[in-house]
Length: 336
Ligand code: PHE
Image 1 (cartoon, rainbow, N blue to C red):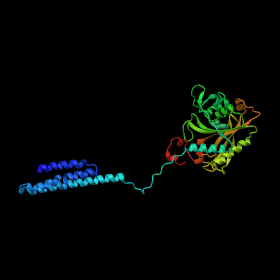
Image 2 (image 1 turned 135 degrees about the vertical axis):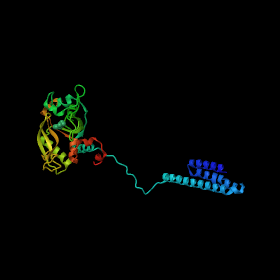
Image 3 (image 1 turned 30 degrees about the vertical axis):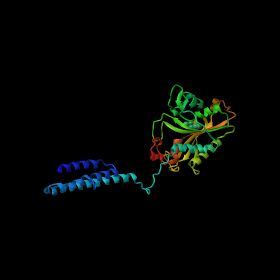
Image 4 (image 1 turned 90 degrees about the horizontal axis):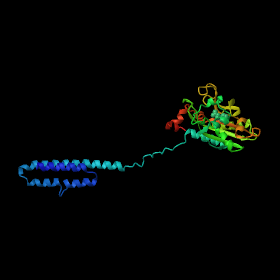
């Protein structure tokens, strides 16, 4: 009798262990505890065939194992139903997950804004190659070999005669070679200089170049176009200052300053205590440049300008480190 009980118990344990769903559970229950032919039920019935003095012991044993199997089945039933619940539970009152919407990079946004302003004044957007020849990057812009101004554009040289463009001005030459006046273009794009990286320098950055050539283009046109740009970019109440400057490809040349956006002209760390911030360089196209592209200097005048997109963006939004633009940290990018 004891042996049989042990065997049945072992068998029941193994079968219950393997149960995976409600249907299997019910089958196992019937096999052991079924009222008609359950193995335990059978066992209990058989007790009456035993000799009288063995019956109490056998009865206790059989009832013990019956309870044990009952408990194992109950435990299994709970396990199964909690698993099924987890799978099926959908809480319709739960707030939905908001999809994150992508944005344009702050430099792209700034370039777009600059483009929009000049396009509204009749300028057309053109592009040029990032790999340039020394001729377009320097010579045609009135910077012959060994010209000291070349030092300002410490460049990345490639194969002989080629380099990564150090400014967008070579595109002025490419367009004037192909087209005749009137010309009104802006040129957004990447430029490269061998600068050590710090809070305001990066070896690759972005510029927007501008060029307008026609008969009777004056210095006043230049001032008017640039003022209009600065007011639209930084606000109507921005104070401007045109300051004499020098570029080999423009004469006269100027730098445009806006009153410091941080200290409002009082003088602070950002503006180097000057109260003013430079936002771009510009000037009237030098007759030497017109000669290089075959325009008659007596007949045509033009103005050109160039600005750094990173710098404009930093001043507009108060960004104090150019490196932030290139780290792609979403905590930074999401603020724009
Ligand atoms: N190319 C000049 C620079 O990179 C900017 C400039 C463009 C100045 C056009 C005058 C006219 O510094």
